Length: 612
Image (cartoon, rainbow, N blue to C red; front, side, top):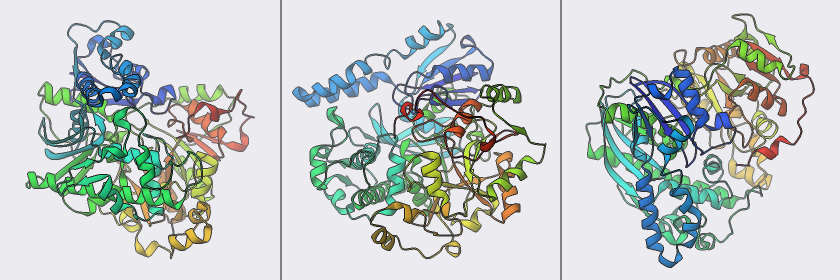
């Protein structure tokens, strides 16, 4: 049975193909269109999935959309009615959108790809069911409780569910306009970052601040109950009115206007981020405890929804030891809804038998594009690129030697990752032992703020020697502290006073023996790497360990600020030439920057990407 899942028309559109419950392929539209968070119907991703599955539309048993548009229209109408004469902004902003493509998804698919054969079912799955399915069905558990937090899907913003065998049941919900995801986004916006893109910055900024606004937010803005349920004081928000994320009252409460994007970040924004992050962690922990209290015999928890990408909160949840096992969908946001919708149709709707796979069924989330040697050479020859093909078995040692000499390497190998994290196949890698590497990579490679942290990729069997972590973290979704014996004395407060809020000296402070991946609070967002999921990447880190004695390398996504992660060898070469990367590795092909012909473009490439 072959099922195509689609997520689209909100943000992070994607498509996923499953065959008899097996995940064949999944990809985000942005990787093909080169438009970050592309929300359009994922035409390229759909074509890619069908091509990889070697099928056409008529051979599909079902096409499933990840959201029920009629329930979303119902919410919109209720919102309009509640606003009465003040609904003009909301109507002007959303009416055409909600009554257009979002309602007629099936018709749009048929217009583009032709009439689907009569035997093909076109189904919709509720938004939070799609998220829940994306977390439960690929997980290694026969049964689990399911926690989903996001902005909003139809009416739901938070759901607690229960999965067993092939069935999922939603047990508890919180409805719009009360939303943990929208709370986080509102404060992200207040601090001058872009909604749905700047949330990672907001999370990365939190360790620089102190939660001095925690009590104020709890008193004025959000009422949190002991079970993790909550209600927002809507006077401080404006998204429900169709204007912007926050109201004037929000700015007045904090005594300062919204920070202008790209302006200087101050202690004010750091402290807001620290306060909101603390509240977010508190709510998620309370929700997990409440879920456990409903069904105390269940020892497994799975997470999805955009808030599940908050790796700091995930780390706090893990340390609470509420559940014996926790598994998080690596494409936890809307992109993963395409996969969840397809899986829910196969198991929940068609009632096929499910057998949980040891480890998980996500295949390392390496579910996207891959390229043959012929395709690689053809694309590189378009640029008259100079390349060397590495001898079999010597590639890893060569890469390790280049890393040890301080080179920054663009690494392109195997199938692209599904989800927002690069996991070693579309990554930029470097030596973590240099205290200046973090700022260098941020400013000269990624072209973004110097404070943003990088993740360590560590050999799975050595992770506990570097970090306070005793479980695997293959999808870079858990934060843990660097081991105390590896830390150096560092006072963030003194550094902030000394540097007069200039973050560069702080970032360049040597906080541990792996400073480039150690955040200012001694935490790190960890990817454990094992041979089963990615033998090529494992062998590179192993060779680096043999070269240097260090079992960790820096891993960040292969892109620049505002650009989607590279998808093709062409994308990789262009990104390599636009930045100060030293070396590019595409499968067995090695390219050195100083050997490449001059690279010119008709216009400034920065103009094609919106800042995040």
